Image (cartoon, rainbow, N blue to C red; front, side, top):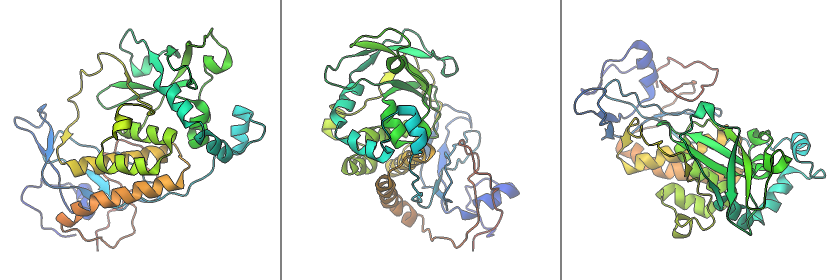
Length: 348
């Protein structure tokens, strides 16, 4: 391992030194007063990169206790092997006369407008601040779209600041697209567990832990719209087209628990726009992997966008792809790690 270090870098333990053997650039944490100052802003530099294995899904962590802080992102995003939804399990869940999940997905595309109108028309009345670990089983939901297909469940997703967002979804849409979403809990609207009307019903709440909760809206929109061009535009610009920004047919996911912005400053802000975009693209990819999303074209577009965004960062850092094939995990990952242990081998 090269023993030379740039003057700004703090001393690393032997384990950290081994882990940083693939690093090519540092992103530094600017804290004006103390290491625990509330003014946590990532500035200057680019990113460290690692070579991901097929099953690597990590959430880069930003350690605010020390200076500088590292932001670790992969060299590229592997295109995973897409495995079809379990047809037998799907049939037991929905009893659709033996129709294969792939056929259901094709049929759902023709009803995009009705599904998205139903989601956009869902409205919650939240009277108190919910704790993610003590959410009610059901939440009363009003439906304001006369032509939309009403959603069946609410996905409760919390970000690192404790902000909970409820995303209305249709169980058949999620189950036919995501391998881990088949077994959503029974919902009153589909099982007649509580009284319902055409304009209101109780929806089952499902807490969904995700590695990058802030990236979920992009993934959520694609699941319902299945528009690769829109996906590419959103990923590389991080801006919704005008029609989407107006939520015409976009699942908004704006049903936010009131009073949940109290801890909004607990996470650092990444100032570099390209780095933010790369991190969000990685987050969309990580969410899709975690939910076992079955769309090969989606993964290809996400990979292309990611490579396009990070290429200038690697060039600016003078980065050359190292020759190695060892498993390696970035330090302080928040998401669950693969069972393989990190390698202490140096780069070639």
